[in-house]
Image (cartoon, helix red, strand yellow):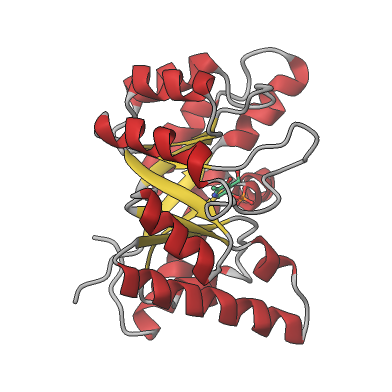
Length: 251
Ligand code: PXP
C-alpha cells in the first residue's frame, strides 16, 4: 500500500517573534506562503486562549491565502469551537492547553476526558472538519480516540525527542507500538512536537505515520539559514528515512 508522509509546518513561533514587538513583522502568513513554496503539505497554527502567538486575524488570513490545507490546533473550549466552525479549516487538532505551560507539554487525556471531548469532536466532524486528537503514544488513549469517533490521532513525540540514551529507545518503542495500534484500530496517525533534524528520521521511518507537524525547530533554524532551506532539509530527511524504510514520499 502506498504511504505518503506529509509535512505540516507549524508557524506559531513566527508570530511569537512578531508579538515580541507588537507590530506586523515577521508576518506568519508570509512564512506560511514561503513554507508552501518550500514543500510543506500543510500549515499548522495553534490559536491559544491567551493569543500568545497566533491571533484571530492570522487564522482569517491563513484561511483566505493558503493553497495547502490549514490544520488548526485548538483546545476543547466553546470559544475555540465557535472560531473553528466559523472558518472551517481542513483539519482541527484538539490539544490540551494550560495557561502556565510554555508549550503543549503532554497529550490530551482522551480516556479520562471523554464526556467533555465528545461534543467537540462531534460538532467539528459535523462541519466537515477532519478531527485529530493530540495524545500520548498509549494504547488506552488510542482506544479512547476510537470511542470518541475521532478519525485521526497525532502522537506526542515530546518524550521521545527529550529522552537521552536508552530512554530514547524506550520512548521510540512507545511511538512504534502506538503507530501499530493506530493502524489496527483504523486511525490515521500523525506525530509531532519537538522534532529536529536529529530526531525526525526514526519517526519518519514508521510506515503507518502519514503526517509530521513541525514548528519550533524549523523557525529556529530559519534564523541561521532561512526558512526555505530549513524546510527543504527537513523534508529531505523525512523522505530519505521513509524511502529507506520502504515507503514512499509525498508526491
Ligand atoms: N503538533 C502539535 C499538536 C503541537 O501542539 C505542536 C506544538 O504546538 C506541534 C505539533 C509542533 O511542535 P514543535 O513546535 O515542537 O515542532
